Length: 193
Image 1 (cartoon, rainbow, N blue to C red):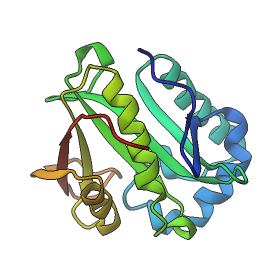
Image 2: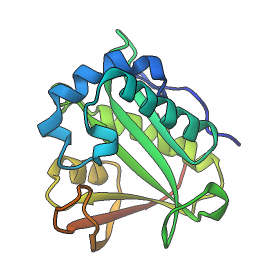
Image 3: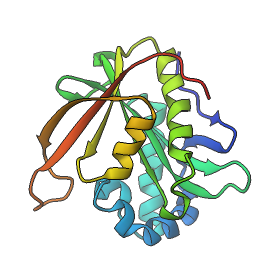
């Protein structure tokens, strides 16, 4: 079963990024540098000129279509506003891999600062986890988050994930020291939307 190109929840539309999302996404990235910058790799979160951002988003869309990684832009259903991103990645014990080499999934997410505290990430993540469960590929899903990122840890807990491990991992920015990550895990079962 392929990953659907659109997921709807009561408040959200999740769909692959497109190059023409760049004009709406750029001001969100610019306004949220301090909010998401410490936690998200620069190749995803760094604001760049519109043509480069459009190219980045087209690349994310191509990776989605090729079943390499599934980055869903998260949009408000009522007004189409860009809210953030929900991601699914195929993994194995070595890291992110092609779907056919995987035995687990990884869930990622970010949300603009002025939309926090409303349960939007949990709502979007539950929908994405429901899709992942239907793949019949992953035994479980992991969330990997920086130990210092309390909101991300709170999402893992609200989704019912359990802390499985604490590891030291490579930094997301060149020149930064290694970071301490918590690895949260959950068996895949159908999630309610």
